[in-house]
Image (cartoon, rainbow, N blue to C red; front, side, top):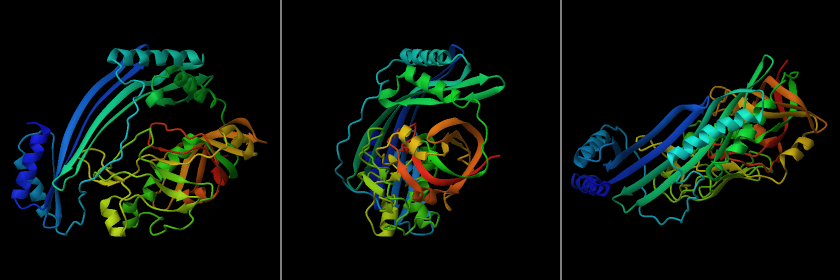
Length: 440
């Protein structure tokens, strides 16, 4: 049975059984990964997966059922209807109707069309180049090349027909460097059109590892801080739930009902752009057309991220931010491609503008040291001590603490160095008036 035949039979049966509407969400994907270590292939994996979620609306209630076998559509409908009857309260979750979508072109990545042999050769070459980049590199901990392809289809009995394909390629490497008894690791990644740039990736990873050698703490106190792009991106991604209307309506976000208020410095603009070439898409997880929107404009909160349900509850239009991790996953709210808009000042000029202070290059413990409800964070960090606008030495074994919204309000300047590093959430470097640091 084809997917179309399955869908048509499921829809006909659902309506005949008294359902008000029915919808299918189908997602299929294929991924390839190869990891090199010690001049050999350490791990090699090719995976394929596909699944379909059926949603029915019965007497104001939604019921869901999932399958990986495209057969017996009637049984799937009956399961979904049984699940709907188990719901004790009316579930007011709208279903999207027929839509017209903006044309979106997927830019081929550097590994598009590459054979598995070619990807394996790239992984092996990436390891060799990383080891050769610095004689102090003892070994490569991780060295991976991968590709991923995806296909999504959303159809319903109200005329919705949304179909898209996704693809991506990447390489990354983690070298281990040692000098005396001191050991550090570095990291570098290349995505999309840069996924085959293994020489640049190897050199960046080696440089990232080497610049940490000789690091030591600084005295505790409040410092002017330049939050380097990598660290700023990680922190922003950790606090993305604050911008979710779903979290706000549950009382789990400080941004609830604050549209129109100033929450950041005038230098800060935060954008959610589904048409950004890093991961373009025409529709969200409900089939709602995606739109580019500014969440924060010159420090003022303009909107939260909505799906159809949260938008109806708030009396606004959906922002096209319904999100599903897979066909079997529950529907939620999340970003498409969310980032702090870059400024015009380069990283080197930001270091000079910092004067005396700290560059925070990396943050650790984001899974435990971040409270998305209060906005507070306390994280292990490393970076560099800066004197009179020049980097003096590396710094490690410190902890930075603060509040995310205060951090946004204390942003003096935004760098021009926006770069996506394996996530659809990113930020350029941020120059901050001050941040509390615990060290010696």
